[in-house]
Length: 187
Image (tube, rainbow, N blue to C red; front, side):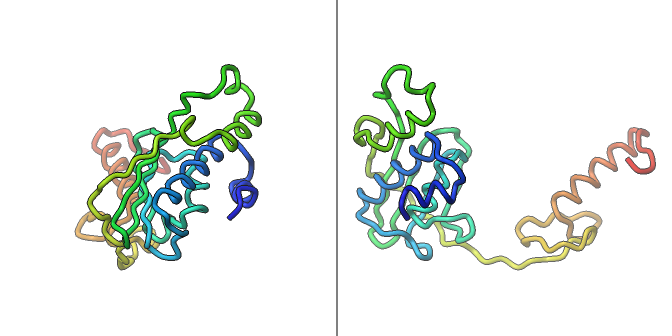
């Protein structure tokens, strides 16, 4: 996908999208890899910001295929692993050389990020990580309370019945309120 197509997918152009695009393309160049059609690549992202949309488009790694893994560390870091070569690359956006005052103008910053050399904004290092497991296809089980299908690995047990997390939490709150004597009908 072109950057313009990625902007359309994301909905707007912004510095975060430009960062993610530059990070993902740097990783793919280093790995000498192509966009994943299935699980050939695995991406581990350390934030849930705009740039992850660009990473999905560039690498083909998605939550739906199970080859996009999220680690909530709040860092602009992507690790991409190629199953065929067993090589990994870690890309960190440092942005150390962003010109003074440019951060205040989002459009100018996005444009500058798209034209800056990799070494001015990124740290790219080959890395060795344990090979991530392929995605698992799990059974769905109906929740005994709401009837909606739930992935078996997310089922809770309540009164020996399978229950989804929202219903479990709702029931726990109801039980706590009942025990405290604060439960009233309809609450």
